[in-house]
Length: 287
Image 1 (cartoon, rainbow, N blue to C red):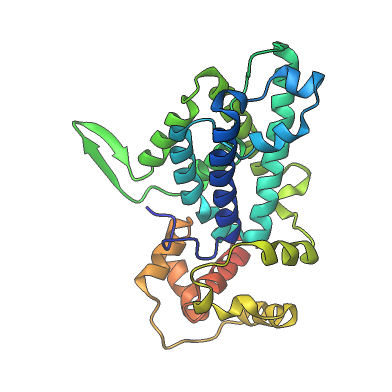
Image 2 (cartoon, rainbow, N blue to C red):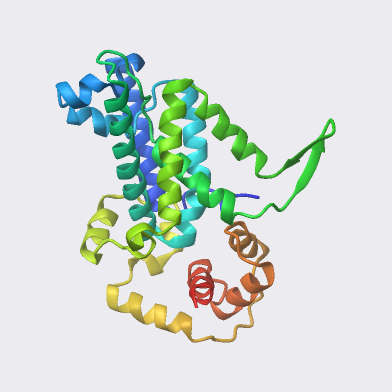
């Protein structure tokens, strides 16, 4: 199992999020010290430190958490490739907002004015992503170590457990807030899974996203909105192709949870274009 092609191909939102997390952690960790990054009752209800809410959504409080967190964020880019960058942005915003509401409730219940009850970092997005990871990503390989059964998903779970227990109670509470947020997204509360940002907002974000290393190999990303809509309609109309789908492209779609035979057929109709094949499969799945 893998997250698809290496790098941040077709995952610009993940790339921007990972970059922001690394920069925030390095800058604020050095400037403020890791002990000052967590959230406390005093921060929210007494001093109204709104800036700390923003920092706590990005900056990890330790190097160990940073490496584990970035690894998981990088792997979960598979979900951006599966549902698209626009919907994945909604997923990040929704999970972050819901998790922050739950964290605020926890702070109000404990009412410890001095202690940083909740650790900082993008726990909301990471542990919200474990919900579709558990439910949608299939096991492709099983093996045993000294008689203990493992699967190719076990390493992701182990990284998640390490991150969840990194700061003990502070990280466990924050992690479970993320899991609840991911579960609510999964349950499609308020129809959130169908929500999208307006096109002008998506275009604005794309201008400030760091350029992908593979942008030169994907000229369709630079087409106009009209051409983009025409290409989507073209994808819906099956077109025979004499090009045999590559094994890498099939593996990418299989890693997203699609059936191998269905992935192969979609790639044939989409002329081996992974993005177009993903659209075909998602439309077929929603019908």
